[in-house]
Image (tube, rainbow, N blue to C red; front, side):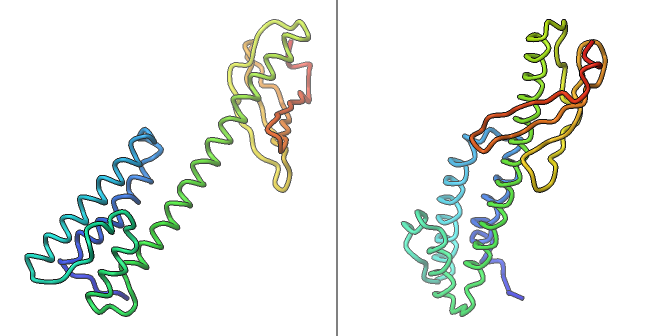
Length: 184
């Protein structure tokens, strides 16, 4: 599709490193990702400009590190690449990073619902003077097309209690215990 050569390695790294950092976001402190991306951007643009200068090829201004897609567009233009492959690859990379971010947010949101469900089951038990508490949410799956989740929670007596959780648009969460006999 697009032909890249050895002289494109720094420009390709400029695109790929933030993508890799985004993918590692689940295991790395998110506060590190932004500065690491900016640092890698500055480094790879500097290295690319240095490599191009040694080869006697013109480069876009160093200050385009502030807008790396513009740097890549101008670089493709200077290299007479009509289809702007580096810029297009950067666009694809951004779409992938957004999808990774959305998937991470959905996972985090589901974990929040699970945690809050367990807390509310414990509250319900204490309100009804039932000793014990929720240990963990075993399973909680969203009912497709609704704001409801169905699943089970494990309580301290070892029973698995079936629950329905309702996640409201305003962020409030309501829990209904469908079989209260398992609480005792």
